[in-house]
Image (cartoon, rainbow, N blue to C red; front, side, top):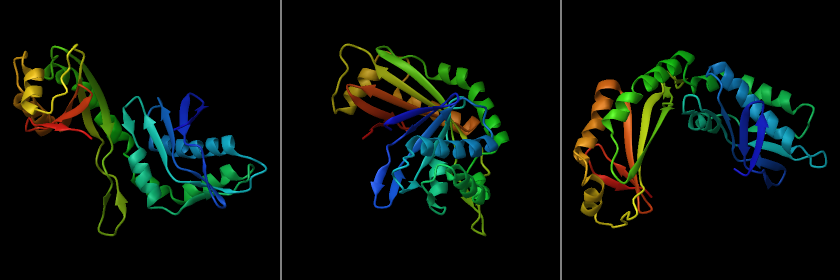
Length: 258
């Protein structure tokens, strides 16, 4: 993202348009908002993002059409990023092309969205499902914090968030969004000690991480399983050690990322 514009209290980031023949392509426009979630609110913001970016990029001396490739919306209050679901919706829909006409561009955007309204709504979690998942997210935060305690020489960070589920298709190939967003806690332990090892030996890393705590990697993995099997809450554990990003699996294995 290399451009930032404000839309009321929200922030829109987007990539500068790329020029391909008769088109200027907006590869990705992403809005972050602290609004209360609603399906109707998502639809309004979807329209607003595109219209706002087009107004910003309009050039009366350039008659090329705009091709809007990908749009994302993130609700920071819930840690809910809808970019993936909206991206799938757009890739499965007719191409969103807006003629370079400042007076009618907003109308063109509204017409396109309204013509795809049923399909777009199917890719979005319902208002009640988001509220249900958010309440669970808030309720279990203290317990997650207790079950994944501090580790010497590491700074612990917990990122609670909701992750939308992928829409399911019915027998008639219609898309249905029936599942609440997943409740996720990303727990990251960042090494702050003066000697963070960069060894490739897993035993060495395990000893460094768990050497001075009353639990081991397998017990921590079992706690991740416990939350999922009992509360349908996903706790994911990561370590950042010596410039390495490492995931802890539910079986207690260390898996390097990247």
